[in-house]
Image 1 (cartoon, rainbow, N blue to C red):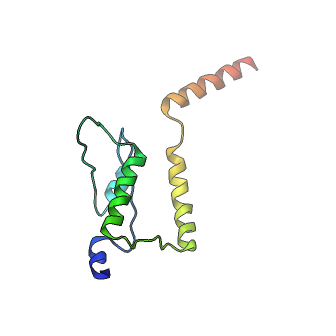
Image 2: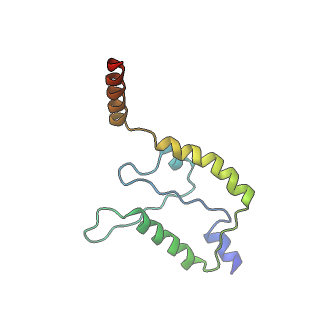
Image 3: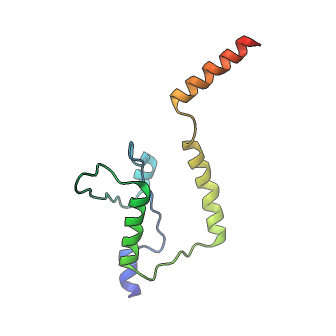
Amino acid sequence: GDDERETVIPQKLAIVFGTEAVGCTSEMLNAADKRVYLPLRGFADSLNLSVATALVVHQLFVLDPTLVGAISEEERVELRKVWYVKLARQRLLTSSQKKRKNRLLNQVRSCE
């Protein structure tokens, strides 16, 4: 019942997935109450993000089929303000892209 759900799944839950190459950021790992790793069987070296997400969400519904999103619009807006900025920072240029950009800018400047 509801009492059991409260001990298994918290009232507020954020699930963060890391990249295959580096996992989650240290900020996320340090802020986490729990860490979950999906075991791999057979020949797979990793799981596609959508597959990993589906497995985790499916397990949440197995634990509690009555789950529904209950975030208010105000809370959703506030979370987006914070997290969109953080996500955008991760989309910045890689070091090789920055080097290429700088080379191209220098070529353009030399032509002026």
